[in-house]
Length: 199
Image (cartoon, rainbow, N blue to C red):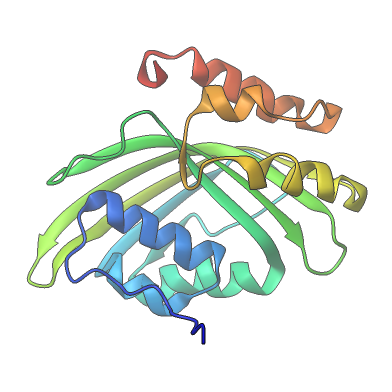
């Protein structure tokens, strides 16, 4: 008889695993995972360059960060896919790390599809219980709203086919559907794909 098993948390998380844990917590609406990724006194800064979504500019402490990035986010969105775009995930022992990101999700109320992109800047600290995220700066450069009838082409035909959660701007841009509403995201990914950090 087959039995379902729940993935177990590693006993010690390096910076790459911390980012994976954050992505899983947010995308799967699992706030209980956030203490495995963030320090109790962590700080979140957010810069939003789109009118299609809003977040507080600063959140202080694990509870506030989990509320913003997981609990409240999960109340509004489902079908969430978050990708970290880089050819080089953080090495073990890294204190700082930067990468781009791509996200797709659907609104629970109106079923509209949202696709956004921007950048992450992480700072890690080694504590008694292991590595944790001390600060996270998120910049939202674009957030586009698409109608519900784009659900299949965005999620099934595109995002669901990408390697997750680590990918590159080059690959995600190459496989992006040709939808006019995605042009700001395409332009950002194309620009980043040609940046030396993504070679």
